[in-house]
Length: 163
Image (cartoon, rainbow, N blue to C red; front, side, top):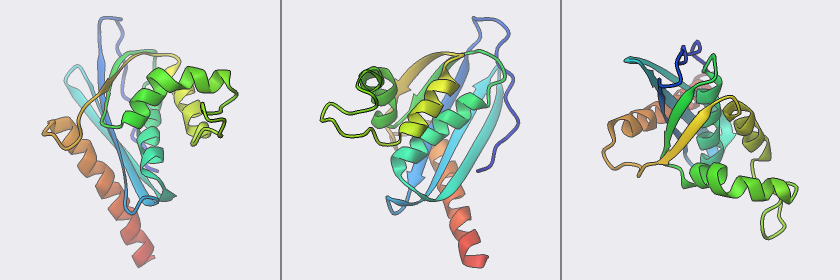
């Protein structure tokens, strides 16, 4: 997984860090890639990475975790994702999962618990507005992180063939 240096967060609470995230896995499960774009006061930072064996949902969660972990100080954040799993998980399902000891309503173990816990820890210092956006609908930043996530996955696949 590659990581860029942390982006400088806002000094004042009125400042906002905009984040777009995406994950990719082909086939699913299989090799996966993730990416995030962080934008603050006209500055941008791209981060991305890949895993040899993953799922699309794991890559979506990893992108959000890595983006929030890249912030140096508590920040006001608007995080855009095209993953309903990520958006609904963090805003709707998570409190019930925790109350039930990381079990779903059906009593099954919550998938990707370690990543949900990582996301909770990464999100804790920040004020986050979670926004779902339709994927592949022409949003420039969403298309950009989709390309970056796919490129990270493809680079890992090439490494495996060459190495």
